[in-house]
Image (cartoon, rainbow, N blue to C red; front, side, top):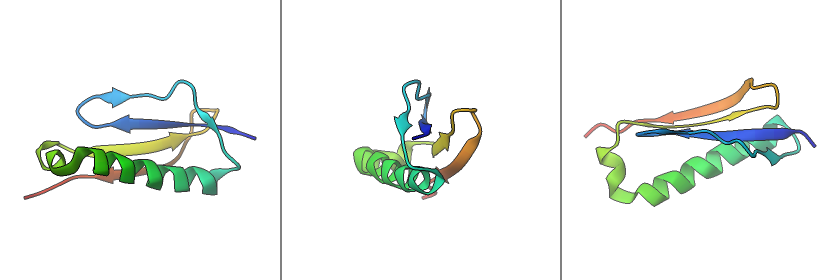
Length: 74
């Protein structure tokens, strides 16, 4: 199985150096959605004070498979 790396950027950047084995790009996209939802849940109402949230997945070659960017305006 190929290895994918899930990275997060909010106030700081947290690169994934371990990665995870996933079946392919479709499963990587699903994981990005899941991780983004978990991050938003963890933020709770503090998300409104954050500049933005970006979660993206890269493959073993370092190429971006997919990315989600979320920002808040209120």
